[in-house]
Length: 224
Length: 404
Ligand SMILES: Nc1ncnc2c1ncn2[C@@H]1O[C@H](COP(=O)(O)OP(=O)(O)OP(=O)(O)O)[C@@H](O)[C@H]1O
Ligand SMILES: [Mg+2]
Image (cartoon, rainbow over all chains, first blue to last red; front, side, top):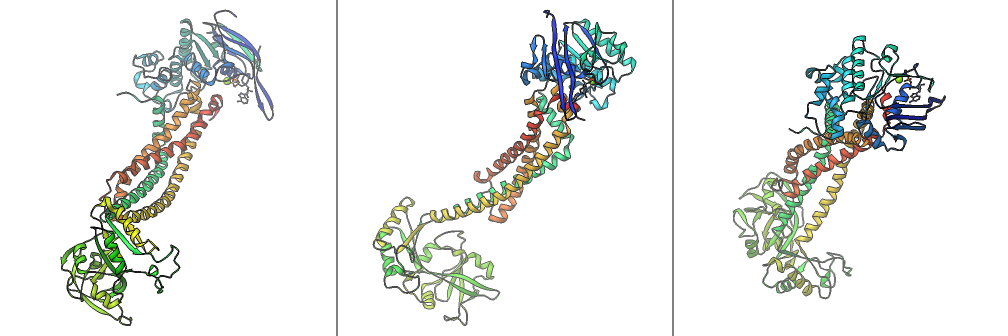
């Protein structure tokens, strides 16, 4: 393992025990991702891509095997530490945006920052990020329900970036966007990657995967 | 202006989003707080007013015949062989009490209950008699004068209203077919209100002359009770003991009581009633607790996905717990606050209606029931929110995110 490895998975298995039989969502996945890499993950529906992302994103712990984030075995961390890791080191852009419905776009972006530092931001950083993704102050005052899918996705990107995470996880970031907006979002991710962030992105679209340095193919819970 | 905690803001917005539901849940707390605060205030006001009324006679000892218990088997009223079985205080005993009481003012009372009839109305009341000198010493008139002949009486203020009489009115005492027959007397004076007191309940009594009383009911020199007005209230226990030692040396002839004993009895009765009433009011709080619990469970269930989002972007379990406890607390504190304001208004009206005076309403013992009720109400609300909040915090982020 080199000193620049940020993510290292070793024989990771995730089994969902169901009445109809165990589902092996991940069936012995080993992989390493270096700092500053842009990795695309592809594979058919149900192959285990989201499950893999959830392990890397510290949202889930594997049934067996180890997941190391920046050298730390997440299986040994408490729920409290895992939560702090999600808040401070990982930016997760979800397939379904997952914005907080009670908060405005601005507040959604501000939220992880306030959680982390326990005070409100007065540096203008939140609006600067929103401006960078093309959400002006007027639009930032809207609740998620009052925004279009593309606008929500941009807010989700800004939110994922607000705590300057070392790792950016994107689960089909352009899955339900038109091609123009998709291109804008992909350009944004590419820029962030050039600035030194590690980006891992799930996609179904080969053109989108072009942005990545490397593509990992998943099939039936294994790396093909 | 400093913005509140972001977790608290989320709670506030959730309450506002489900305003109707939250208001309905708070209503239960409002009712519960009003119930317990009002009951507490009624009880406190009654106790304060009784204490105040009795304190006017705190320096009085009441000596009554001890006709039962104490090892003597005599039936009261059935003439016994020895003095200690009498249900009256004899003139000799009265002299002994006078001697034992030192410089205190000592007087005797005759008392009977009899039927009375006036032009407008009829009923039963207590008839008291005492000697002329004691009457002038102990009783105060608001108008008129004390009786100078056997056919003249003074009456308590409550009777004025009840029987529709005034100075100069005639009152017929007794029944025609009664063994004592009916005697008509004339009202010459009306007494000042004394309120609750242990020595003489003169507010709803007729005071007659000693001569009239013994003439009608017999029993001369057989007193129903002897009152001892002690000069110095600090001496009251010494005087009581001295009377007890002098008269009860051989047998228990008399009982000596002061107002503190009556106060104890009344307080403990009030306490029992209050506890019972509070238990009933407690049921309303229990119902409120159930409705808060229900609302909080609904809020958690509706927001499972939101909880998943919050958790996935780094919200700690403890922060989720806090968010829902805050939500219950907001409902509880607002409900308890409204309840407090209402219980001041409603409590004032009820205290006036039931105690007859709001003189003590603003006393600490009375008003303290409002913050007490508030704290109990808000606490119950918060406690009801703890389990739903705990459930929310225990949700697995991934599972919660999958919820629709
Ligand atoms: N909570 C769960 N309980 C049971 N089975 C699950 C659960 N989560 C995922 N699975 C199963 O694990 C497998 C992998 O699911 P996953 O969501 O990782 O697929 P995916 O590659 O992301 O698919 P898609 O491209 O459709 O998003 C699927 O067969 C799915 O049914
Ligand atoms: Mg998926």
